[in-house]
Length: 286
Image (cartoon, rainbow, N blue to C red):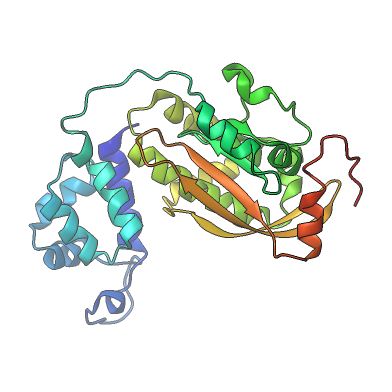
């Protein structure tokens, strides 16, 4: 990915989304274009207009921590957005050795862990949102139309973001599809900054941009969100409507592996439905 260009795009989008009142400046009436002016951002960040303009034009990389902090304050960035801006700036990659992109695999210990989470649907995701593994309940919840063993073969491995935009069965699973899709794009943006040198991740973004106009529009907005927990509403083809909570457990290393889990309130209809997912022999009916 072209990180200087991505950094410039991110800065432009955030500048355009703010009004003077959002950052404590006087507003003197209607503006010709929405958002803050470059001069205003540069002033609040304590840098020259020329330098800031070059950042937006993608002509600077490896900005210092001080510059990132100043821009974050000027643009009222969240902690997640500030980290994303730092990733795009190249701070964390200055001394990094280039890595060759290769297929990833779930660790045996992680696989045993999710297999023993009998009542909790779980999916192991890689840094490209590819499915590295799932337990029986996780598979039957999110992709019962796919082969259970498909994550074992990299060439057949499902990808949660690709399925959300290009797989009809997955789209039908989410009655509020645009909300789910927006969350997925925001998460993928975060990953694209963290793993900027991963060729397969860049290829995924390129594929989705070409094949899905909806993805292209959402991606161009440069949303950023670290989706670690929340709620997912589903319309399961066999279990019917489900309102579930989700939690994402991130591995404490640089692998980018995450375990996506789904839960329900004890004693609820959703909890009873999830319990039916744990037995491969059970015939599911709504």
